Length: 356
Ligand SMILES: *Cc1c(COP(=O)(O)O)cnc(C)c1O
Image (cartoon, rainbow, N blue to C red; front, side):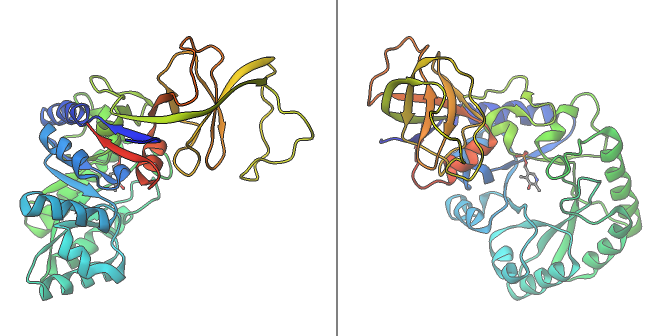
């Protein structure tokens, strides 16, 4: 298939899902696989399920609808982004449960579920300090009472999300607080809830050593998808990072100076270019892929002697001076991707998705 393309190694994604699910199981934790960085790609989702995740989650309704059409009612689907009030009917139609923090939306979900003859699960989000979504701890008890009194929904559990906006890391202390809140409210309501959901990939580093007892669920995307420990910014032990490989074709390869010539203004995006180091004359390449599909930071060349210089909308510039392969026009170069690049490449209609 033509370039640019992203090769999706489903076998490797399955391996990653298996490693994470098994590790979590030892702490009594089940894993929901998060597909949003791949636009709810069904092949990625299938690999996650085969690797042992217990259900799927995505932040967008259209992605969940794809997954529902493909898997039918065999899998549990969780909507991650707080539902829009204007879309509650579709939320109830498509997802088994959703993360929530707004009572007005939960009431609307309950009415929609009643109309559709369903019960929709509500995971109440608690903000432990990262300041993205969630009720502050003092407001959770009252919200739980309201959810419990509504006919179309049931309180499926409590969750938190960290390391997303504020960069606050999950710890024994803040996750312990989530468990305490959840257990108090369970006693209050006189019922056991299904999930106490202790976050995303950034909670995985606590497995085996410091995840508080009571946490029984995590929602994991990045570590399964690209093997990254998002709390420590390093490879997660036992997982692989060569799961998605971006490939782009060489359309120019010429020897040029390494410093631009002339008066410096701004680049294609209005940014003032950083002064590149003068390395004399170097062989440079242009690849037919650009900011519309990738971002130059966070791509890692898999070929030797390749350095990324920068990108404009449709061009990725690379230094190929030290590459031993005598690259020619029409050859392609391969890169592993970080989360931002995975997101962009999978979202771009210009990048062919090749499933292996
Ligand atoms: C994206 C998201 C996740 C998964 O995050 P990863 O870092 O990819 O594991 C979990 N929960 C919520 C609410 C999310 O939005």
